[in-house]
Length: 366
Image (cartoon, rainbow, N blue to C red):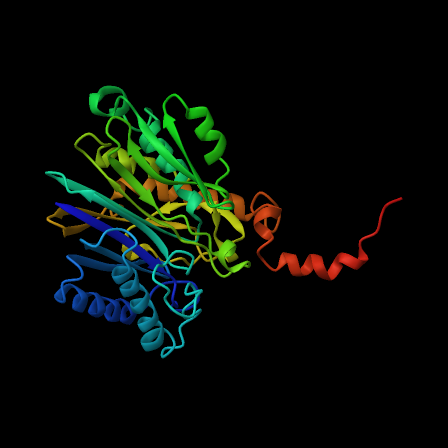
């Protein structure tokens, strides 16, 4: 059967600063989606959080960009904001809701979306990844390693069904354009783009031999939508695994290295992306370090069997230790680069105001 998986997130208010979602927010959102399932709009759903982002994981038969499903997500976020976030005076209530009213589609309205319609295979393992305190470019390195690096994914070498490689759809988030690049023959071109994580982000990945969808990620940049810093993007993505795609273990292996990503405190610093179980997806130290949580599901006629908390495993203890050591090191730089982001990213923070204030005091040296 054809099923649509929609992973939609928003920061709509947090308990004790930019820290964690309140349990009442999850309860109210779950009730809303339960009613939608009973009414036949959804096949299934799961509500969770990573850090201060409320995550709606939904399956349905409405296809991508469904006005009904996107409207449901918008109504859920606004209802939770009004009934819980504002009532409890949670911090930054409704932060990611950049529009005043729903206009038929969530694109450009603030919430992050990873969504795709596909034919459910005979066995369909899907892994959902949710990050806090970072940007969509944080997925570039993991997606490259999963689908193009044989040192991470052994199947690229020894599994005939992966041997032809994958196509990466890369988005220029400044120009709102995409380009398809093929691995392995265009690896250098691919890396030339996606190494610039603030501008070029991987939107989706397809298997070369038959264009089977393998992964899809959110690409929204809040600062580009709002024209100023209003919170970090906190991206989501999901990856299909096994049966001619990378194995679950290969998908997870890339996160054993906590690579540096942009975000962290005030969205203005680089920090290590720490893989954590959902219970530890609480951003504290310097509002971080940036976190990634992961839930695994088995799809069964659109129903979400699970979830399994994929990082709730001592095998990732070493990654967490490395992340903490990296955080120690980079924090010693204080407000200096490379701990602080470069000028192109700082343009959306209060640094722009500081430069404006000092503009008249700059003078030529000769």
